[in-house]
Each structure stands twice: as C-alpha cells, then as structure tokens.
Image (cartoon, rainbow, N blue to C red):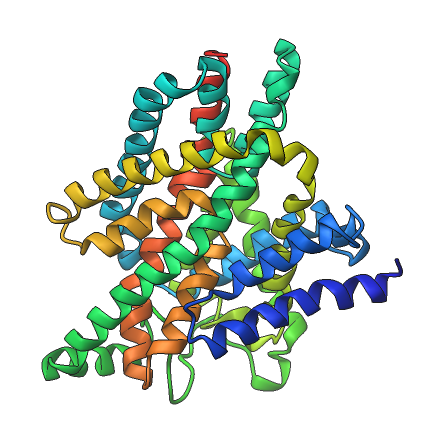
Length: 400
C-alpha cells in the first residue's frame, strides 16, 4: 500500500466516524465508529502497519503527544487544573473498585493467572497490556499471552459509547443549570473576556506580554517553535526527576505555566492551524493497536474478557457512585472520571469536545461545559492510564 493510499484509508475511517457522530447527535461517538471500522479493516484488508505507512509511527506520535499536551495547557488555568484533585481521587479509587471486585469475583470464575493477567490492561492502556503480555511470555504461560491485548482492545470499545452517553447526561444537566442561573451566565461572560479564561474562548484583542511580537512576525512556524520549546523543557525536566512525574503530565503543566505567563497564546496550535492534524495522528496510532489481535486469537478468550470487563465496570461504578456526593460531583461525572482508565488521552479529550459541540448553543454554554468537564476528564485520564496502570502492572507482574 502506498503512503497516499494509507492516508486515504485512515482518514476515511476518521471522517466516517465524525459524520456518524454528527448524524446521531453523538449517541454513537466518532471514536467508537472509527475504532470499529479499523477493527474490520485490520481483520480484512488493512495491513498491520497501516498507521506507520501513513507516516504516523512511534517517533512521530511521541512528538505529537508532547506538542498536543502543551497545547492543551493553553486551554486552562493552573488554578483550575490544580482544583481537579477530586477527579484524580475518584479516578484512582474507581480503579481500586475495579481491582477489588474483579479479584474477588473473577478468581471464583476463572483461574488465578487469567484474572491477574487481565486486571492491569483493564485499568489502563497499551503499556500495561504489553507489560503483562511480556510477563506471561517470560513465565511460559503462552495460552494467556493474547489476553491482555484482547482486554485492552475490547474494554476501549465498550468504554467509548458508555462514556459518551454519561457525558451527554452530565452536559444536559449542566446546560439546564447554566440557563436557569443568570448570575452564572454573567460570571462565565466575564471569564470569557478575561485573559486567564480557563477555556481560552476569547474575543477582542489578544493580551500583550513581554513575549508578544509584532503580528507580521507571529507566524505559524514561530508558534510551533514556541510550543516545541516548552515541550523540550518539560520532557527534560521530567528526565531530571527520573520521570517520577510522567513526561506527558509535565508537558501539560508546562503548557499551563507557559500560557499563564504569556509565552504561549490561547489555543496555540489551533492558531497555527495544525492541531487537528496532530490530534488525528495520535488517534490513528491509538487505533493501530487494534491490529494486535486477530479473530482467531479473540475467539477462545472472548467470554473471559467480557465477564471480567463487566465485573470491572460494576466495581468502578460502585466506587464512583459512592464517592460522587462526598466529592461534590454527579455520579455521571464521577463515573466518567473513572472510565478514562479505559482509553486515556486523546480519546477523553475527543469524546468531551464532541459532546460539548453537540449540546452547546452559545459560546457561554461552550465555555461553561468545557470548564466543568474537560479538566476532570484530562486529569482523570492521566492519573489512571499514564500513572496508575503502569504501577498496577508492575505489581501484578509479581503475582503471576
């Protein structure tokens, strides 16, 4: 397959997903539809290295991730990001609920190695799945090597529509609250006119700082170079700390700080007109993980995977439901924070943005929904997929 044919194939899956989402008013989220198209494609006509042939290889995607996360930092304030400790707690405790119920009930239904191999990828992404697969191979338990990958592929497909439905319920609740509260509308309007607006939805002249250059010099290349510079600083600082804080999290934090001091403008990569391309690249690479599993491998373990996913989702729901009121969230929002463990970034961003675009009818509503939901979803995804799942996988490897 040529590079042009590959880019046509992957973008075709993406735009069909977007169209179906718009037609169904996000009841069928775009990432779910696109993921199903990729599954069918990989099981039929797509080459396994389709994303690499379309130029979205590991090197490119790692770069895209760093740039994208710095960009996301320009959409929120440091104050609002730090306020999301409740979302972090709920996400992590939701994962604990998954582990507890899956281990308690799952070990009654299946053997020990099956449950231990399935839990880490159930609470995280591709890194946890690969760690467990390699651990099983080293232990010589070859019959279960495909299980972690199968779990990762299946739980993400379940997570997309479930999270989308709950986000839609939360969005409708928030819009009803917003429309019935004139004082809240006034606060959001004032925030939108302020330079430190957390959603970066702003009108009027851009704020001027010591980093501001004349407009004719403020080119796309200059903006991209600044974002890349911040990403370099963030990853270097993470390395200096021996990656105690995940480099992805560091990129987001550095992006927020760079935006707050005026080094980066609002919605930096949107202004440079490349953010959609970067986001699509990350999504396409994420969907490429669906090629790791064939129907032949999936068949014998499908029931095990399905039962463990159901147990995990019930455990996650119970923990989130019980914690929602003490942490001042609706149970839908609390559950969504926990569900980010099933897919992480950028799918949490895409799902949230899609729901906001479908529900909001004004800039005020858009800003309010983004302020209320996006930071929670982002930090929830980082806490679970980027951090907790790797820790859980390293612990469960010793239990094999």
